[in-house]
Image (tube, rainbow, N blue to C red):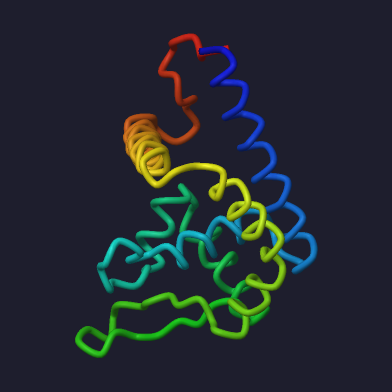
Length: 162
């Protein structure tokens, strides 16, 4: 099990490094990249509800002022666009701008190729198990995120796995 934890940490570290390099290349903060990911992933599971600033602020655990500054940077840089809801003009939807998606696709293409190379080493049955694990892990991380308060560690006083 220790090997499992080490491998997860190493993978997370590599993803963080790639995200940080993208942020620097785009003149963004790492929080901005986290916001972009959340906006891009909004509704990925079949829902068509775009991200809103309030939901994003809650997800990233930012103050209203910090969220506004983040969205202003992303909008100025051409990465997101804000759009008022047709049904309720008080609601703002956030969309990942198409030209910015092209920039991200080009930047992350090597990662996509690496992911495909790794995926190709597994059978469909093995990949279904991996997907189940990743889905369960994301559920657990989501639960953990919502049980720990802002400024608290995720362990709630328990010792983290080595």
